Length: 263
Image (tube, rainbow, N blue to C red; front, side, top):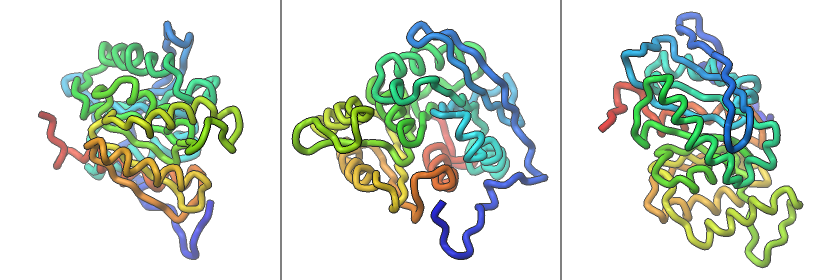
């Protein structure tokens, strides 16, 4: 992590003894599109089946939990009323570089299989503004491409240090063959940008090689009429950077119960 002198972890990233902790439950899902999937579900401390909840889907969920301390972040932000009580699906992929690179099967799994299954088992709001999908690096591409394939379904989109590689001339890219399908997708989007969500939060570190690509995506996203917020951090391509942007991103996309109104 690139730290300036005097850097300290934000207080909301550390366990707080007055915060009531939520619960993590493992899940297994047999997808028609991708086969057996595993992950973890986060239920807020005050979870009640008599209430309804927004849903957040997180790519690379195990890594967000392990390296970004995201359960603690959720516990604290919910306790402080900065975000609403929510249900969070931490998803993982056994082949992320393939599945996250604009894979139609992955988008179908999340949108047409996982979310409907969760809606049957948990009291979820059935509005686009109550569904958020997110990820970092290749996970950001997966989140963006899923929203692209199902415009209007995911009303909130959070992308961190997206691997949005593209080319201005031809199709060959300097990042190698792993990025070929990403380049094809981003080139297609740049040629014909369209609204895929209602609100989009984009963050990237200024010391990342991807900062140019992320900066280039922002005006394209904004031009479609989506509400976009872009945050640059004096940091690199790492989990501390992504963790430290979670508060601003989630609280802007899905404000706490004092401000958050479902229509």
